[in-house]
Image 1 (cartoon, rainbow, N blue to C red):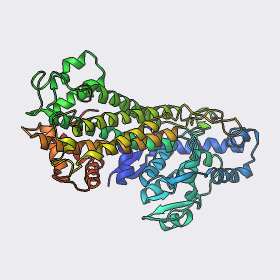
Image 2 (image 1 turned 90 degrees about the horizontal axis):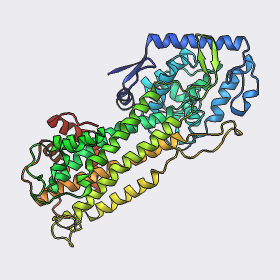
Image 3 (image 1 turned 45 degrees about the vertical axis):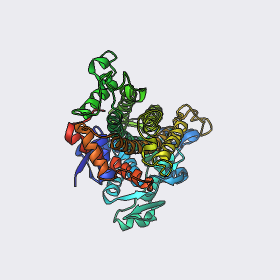
Length: 509
């Protein structure tokens, strides 16, 4: 099994995917261990000397002016966790929970949080032995960090809360015992070090961005199949056209479509079938490309956040100081995840319009709803309904969360990001969008069958074969949700993209 070495400096989204979805083993580097130990020494000195440092020798939030003695520090840290674990709603899925733990380990490994090494090693042991705390999805304001979700993450570490182990949910103490992991007693600064950060929103967003990249590739493949189905005019994809407006995503998309369509005998030149195509084909490089540019922007922001210190206070071993600042504030992620949701929603919007172009005989020369004996058979009529419903829901979900703020902690925390809501919305938009693209893939292949195939391109042939290996041509009405599920499955397992890339090379996003 692959091993991921944690340094606090270079964790990538691909590393996170290996840990979250493939259960890769996690190990702390020697340099990270040393940084954690040095940082902890400073906390111990601050406590011993009675220095006034937020969250170490004081209370939290509005109680930052309340002094805490050395003898009270353990009670303070435990109370922090048990009072902040007030999440709501359904729990995060296992892969997201693993991402939350991994990102918190990486944050602590940078050596600015003052946590004990033993506490970080306990978290690593939980990941490697697959003890997964039950973490409700709702309840974070995304400033002061993801306090409620991260508190639920900590509960099993101190023998409280609930955790899943080997497919069964136990109380936290029992789950740790079953996995042969010792529970811990938190001491000065540790509770705050574990929960003051953006790891819940960032884990959700990191998983979403990985899937968004693959969805953007799948959307290009679906788009190319539509060019095949409608004898699309490929002149609009010429590189010289896009070089005159050199947005990277736009240029890459036009090149990718030609790459997938190479060798096609179904596409046309300007004037052969029509002078120009409707926007959903002709302007697809501009639309898909804009979403890709947004996705790449967000990916860069996420990877910065994954390897950043989002704690408060931050411990600086070189000057032996604990400085209270605001790196826990989720605004950089909140804006990014709102942008991500909008970008993904647009991929679905244009996909649904291409579905409509397939099923509506007024917009093509294809049979109504892509079926013979229309009337007796409804064909793909309601597939478009379902796609329209999903993209309409996405339009509601795409309303930005980051423009909202509700003051908390008696107005000490008077501006918050709502970044975790933004991340969760982006994830839901992605789930809807993937379903729409799955529907388009199915419709495009049916349209190719009904128009007649003169010869698909290298990439479109690979895509068509992958889809037809799962879903046969529709000759008469049958339960279509099963077909859509199968098309969605080849997006989730990435087999569609992999099979096309095997034939034409890597697709650029």
